[in-house]
Structures are given as structure tokens and as C-alpha cells.
Image 1: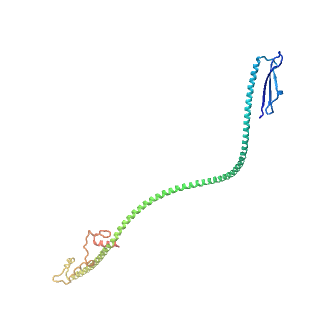
Image 2 (image 1 turned 30 degrees about the vertical axis):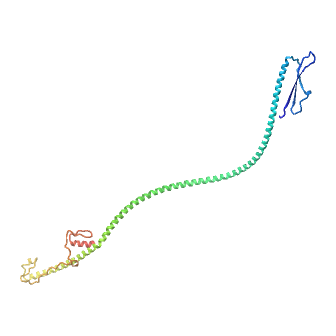
Image 3 (image 1 turned 90 degrees about the horizontal axis):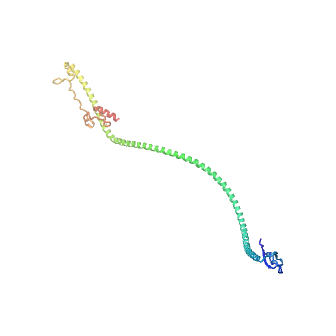
Length: 324
């Protein structure tokens, strides 16, 4: 394809005959020679085309026009040939550049092949690591499922514990409120008991005074009771003496005045036979030689329980029982 054929066109006009009766002819010779095969053919190699027919004079112009057209086409073909040569040179340079580039690409490809082998080795290692990671991920996933189940169980237990704690807190609050109410009642009771204890303490402070008064009342009562017993004994003795005196007076002849003597003894004028009746004994002295205060009915009351007695005897008996 790099070889081109060179076309040589030669034109010659010569008379076909020398005689006067001969007509002139146009001889056109064309020579074709391949480029690169040496110089073109010689004059003996020229192929000629002879127009044997007689051409009139007016056909010369037509032939010249055709020759001119052929020359133009020849120039155009030559120009195309030059362009083809330039294009061929350009293509050759481009081919050399492409060859160099191809060589460089082959070198790069060899480097890429080495890198590809390295990358394949890395891919193999990464696939091995990936399988290990997948096994680890599977194990982690299994552990995660177990942890989720344990978390769900613990969350249920936590929820139940929270609910139980809330219920316990509610019960504790209710118990606390009840305890506070009971404590308030106990505190109120304690306050009342303290007040009662203060009153009892004040009452206990008055007990020695009351005991002393009771001792005085008891001593007075015992002294008065002894005096009354003595007075009762003296009264019985006087009654016995009166009875004996009446018997004695009745035996002496004073029978007419027995009815009056039952109430009042009669003493004969100028002195009687019997002795004078003894005067009644004086009332016994009180505690320490001081006579007891006169009895007052409306003011007779117990100093301990404020019991109102109708008389002194009843009050004294009640005071002794109340003290005991």
C-alpha cells in the first residue's frame, strides 16, 4: 500500500503522411511506470495511440481542449499524489509514535500485570480476612441475639421490680400517713398524760399536807372516840349508881315519888341519906390539849375526795376509809 504508480503522459502531434494528399493525424502517447522502479520507460517503451481517421482542422481545437483537460486532471492527480505522500509520511510518523506508545503501554502493562498479581494476592488475603470477619460477625450476631434476649428478660424483671417498688412506695406512704396519724394521736395522748402527770405531781405534792391533816384528824378522832368511850363508861356507871340509888330509896319508903324519881332523883331536904351525884366529866381535850373545833354540818367534806358528810362521825369514818 505504500507503493504508488507514477503515470507519465506524453502528447505529440505529427503529420501522419508526407504527401500532399495525406491527411494529418494526432498521435497521443501514454506511459505508465510504477514509482520506485527506476526511471520511466524510454522512447521505445512509449505506447502510442494513433488516430488513423483523418481529422479536420476544426477538430484540433477540440483535441487541444481535451489535452488541456487531461493536463488539468494530471496536475490534480499529481497534487493528490503529493497529498498522499504527505499523508503517508504523516501516517508513518504516527505509526512510529504509536509503536513507541505501544511499547510504552506494553511496559506499563507489564508493570500493571505485576500490580495486578499483587492486587490478586491482596484480594486473596482480603477474602481470607473477610471470611474470618464473617465468622466473627456471625458469632457476634449470635452473641447479640443472646444479649438482646437477656436484655429483654432483664427489662421485664426491671419493669416488674419498678411496679412492685411503686406499689411498695404507695403502701409505705399509706403506712407512713397512718403512722403519722397514730403518732399525732400518741403525741396528743402523751401531752394529755404529761398534763395529767403534772396534775398528779401537784397532787402528790399536796399528799404530805393532806397526810398530816389526816393524821391530825385521825388523832382527834381517836382521842374523841376514847373520850366518848370513857364518857359512855361513865354514863353506864352513873346509870348503875342511879339504879342502885333508886332501889335503895324505894326500900326506905319513898314509893310515892317513884314515878317522878324515874326522870329526876329527889334529894331529901336537910341532907339525904345517899351521897351527892358526881358531876358529869368534862369533855376530853383535843390533840395537844386543844379542844376540837365545833362541828359544822354544811362544811363537813373529805379533803381528799371532797365527799360531804352529814355529821362529824360519818366524816371521820369516811376519811379513815379514804386514806386507807
